[in-house]
Length: 146
Image (cartoon, helix red, strand yellow):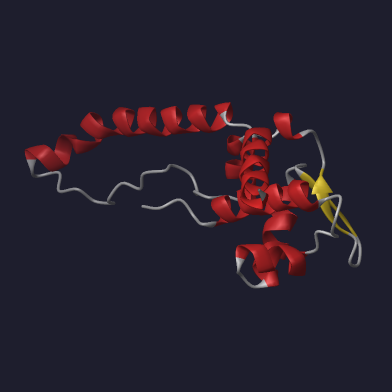
């Protein structure tokens, strides 16, 4: 199972918003060029980020901006905002054969382990701040300009 690309698109969008905020109106059309997707995809993601309190938008072509400081926005916040995974990360096959000793017991053996894996991933996402990604991106852009 893969986490939806909405997550990486949202991180990309937020990085663009912050990187270009002083030079451009960060509209969905502008952001779509950087991400290389249809502006409709960007608008949907911006709506999800807005609903989560991560971005604000100005009507018309005013653009989007971060609703709070970037060091207060974690990857986990974005992950939850854009509904990357519905429910559990691991989807268990529906009907293991209960007449088989493995099928009968597989949930008991795997459920807690898979929940632990998901919790570990989510805890790591909580450690990563959007401000770190923007800072690293700006450093790379500056290095390329030299």
